[in-house]
Image (cartoon, rainbow, N blue to C red):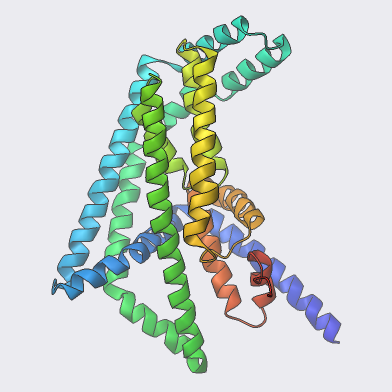
Length: 341
């Protein structure tokens, strides 16, 4: 009987997971801005607390921060969109591919490999991707406005929301309170460290590209900063574009190889060594789980899901850890218990 109950519970968990995934996928346009607003609000909460200590009214502090974040994101989005439009207007995807083809012909790379590289670039339809990015300005503006509205209400109701969660928890209020604190602290710590590391990564890559006279260094610096929020895959994609551009612009192979090597060295140093040292065990997710979570969330929510994969998975892991029944799953997702001395 006990075995049958366990089988039923496991089957029910699988069905529930599939249904939740379906709801997340179908409701992406509604849920994405809400989740982004929650993450931004969580990251900015310590700032609100510090402003309150300076005797600044909470309402004024919230309005100021929301407006500042909104203007910053809008300015960054417009700058990125303008840079992409300028890049493809002046260079053009076809010109870029043709430049790469000419460089490959001059090299000693086997013809089969040359055709594979050029064919992959042509199938990627870079011009089509650029058109979608350039034409996505209206959608970005709508999403940004929605995020700002959500953030305002989240800040306004955060104390009420916490009381609701504690009321639902009943006699487990202490555990629920600890879970909320762990979740908020983990998200704040991760996003803060990731933002600083990404900014440093983008700046260093920009300096390298400028020193090598690679065209559109500012654009690639911005892309590097943004894509660095996507674990593993982001740094690979970020290094691909400037390397191909260096080749397509007529620069020697040595320049392209230096660009590739610089991106690899910067990302390995900052992303694989310094960042984990700063975060420590705060982000208690195994490397395999991080990679899989990026793939899963990207499948559910596209590019936005890839950006949000780590904080969302970390929040889920903390929630699973708060219950005895789901704690084994949380441990499987984690780095693992520390070594016993």
